[in-house]
Length: 394
Image (cartoon, rainbow, N blue to C red; front, side, top):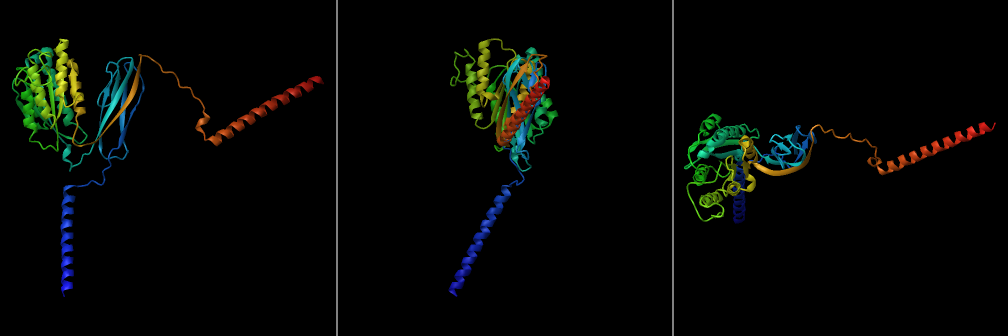
């Protein structure tokens, strides 16, 4: 009787263990939904429809996923090594501007987008300059139009990413003009079109932090800072990478901005756009570039613009650089493109027949047939000559 009791007790324990284990598995299955139909991107290929470009011509790059049945999205952007020779936009359209050679690099991110993947949400704080120097060169209006297009580009993105944008000003003290929204009309109304104040980087960065910090870190969180000059107001510090040798007085504001940015870069992706349309002094321009590049998450996240007409393109370029939490892979491909003078006509290709294309045994057979044919031709010529000679003797 005792043995039976022990057996039943053991079976009951096993049953309890199985019940507990099954419960754990079911909870895990519910919290981690596995998409069995997903096929990740392993690589990508890039092709161009015209490699022999002349000045003034355009060509089109196209990218394809590998394997071809991959279900992850592919987000591609392009860069030219020399825009005086050719430019390329994020749609892969190449425009030849000058004679020479340039390298086009395609950067691709594979994205896993699904209804159950929260990483598809992307929160971006856009900091726009309203300092008085933005009155020059119609810069404030240029910034307004470029920022509107920037918002349109993100909100119309067809990769499956869901963008939420907030607007704050860069002035003596920053002001939040719009909280996170995907409503373009709200954003257009919030983007400043008048310049009134100074330049306080720390205030703007701290406000961006206060807006982004409540957003869960599982989402993508970006800061985009657009400024037409160096920081001149707000917090200051003598501790940092800059000294009075760089700039006699305002270096302390640059140090404070740099120090603030370092802590933010541990949490967010930080992009900077130096809209230096009015800086003519070479040393000041070099210092402004260095500060903005140092504040960015990495140097490649800094974009320099001195021509107001190119600000719109710069904003578009930044949107193409966005790194998202939905990214599952990163790939790069480069291609050398040669641009010929206007009116250049490439030489016609010479058609040749090569035996190398055939298998070795077939090559030998073909050579033997050719040799036999040559011998037959020689024998025929000799026969005809001998016959003609014998006829002439008669």
